[in-house]
Image 1 (cartoon, rainbow, N blue to C red):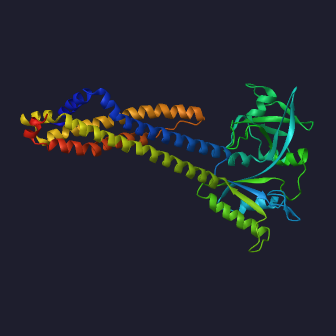
Image 2: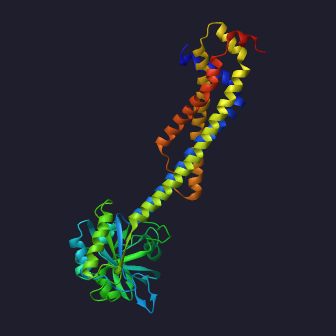
Image 3: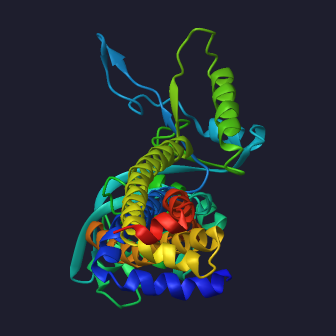
Length: 409
């Protein structure tokens, strides 16, 4: 008798007690469903974190000016201008790990287009800013270095601004927006970017050449930058090196002695993203470990029921042995029954886990990310549970003495 012949026999034995077989597999079903759903939710959370930080930009550093101090009261980072336009040029030239750097000067203004108005953030920057932040134009074109040099009165706008000033579905490219009574030509509409992790609407903003910002909107601080610098490293591996290079370069340019604190601040968003990812991974692993306990509980349930089954079917085992069945035939039958129960529970658990993960993801507003490798491992592990916890009852059945088995009442 081979495994293919044993399988129908084992299946018939299990189907004779459908309710008991179902209850036996329930522990495995719950265990596998828990693993699938919890890992899927954890992966969805991780994907959401990745999307949020990708929206900020890739390999991103933000360099801010220093803090004012008066009578022991500090004004906070950025309150004292310490970054100069020469610093920006030096970072471009002398920091090998830096791919691009761009200033961002911001203020809040009321915009007017025809009979509509909207108060939003106005940013003065360069085309490199959008390259650093992975933020292309969806319609129209981006302003260029020529627009920077010529103080061009052109701008690109986010989706939220476009919808409020011109209406949803209307192309604003080529239309006019007035800021402080100055007409600006809408040159492009940026790709929709969504919200930041703290709820800021990235699309509720307009951007103009920084030179136009300084001459038409808000005067500059001569040689100092009244804003922040966005820096894009060449790769994620180069981001820490870029941070070190910028720190050393600015300390040297600002003539800061050893032991003196930086008069600037560098925020490494990649480190924040990695910390978020590590926290999410730990949380996912914890959930998966807790769910795996359910599999072990399910395996114990299978072992208990198989031991009961051996006791109930002692005479049947004796009859089979009397007509020529070998001990390994009995071992194989009971082992196949245990594995069938656990694998069936594993497959049912996968289906239930997918449904549960989809419902949770929909409720939480997270993307549903199901890892095929986790599904395969869960089913294989459920089969392993069947082998591990079914082996003892199967060995016990195969070692019964045929004479004693036939006499069993």
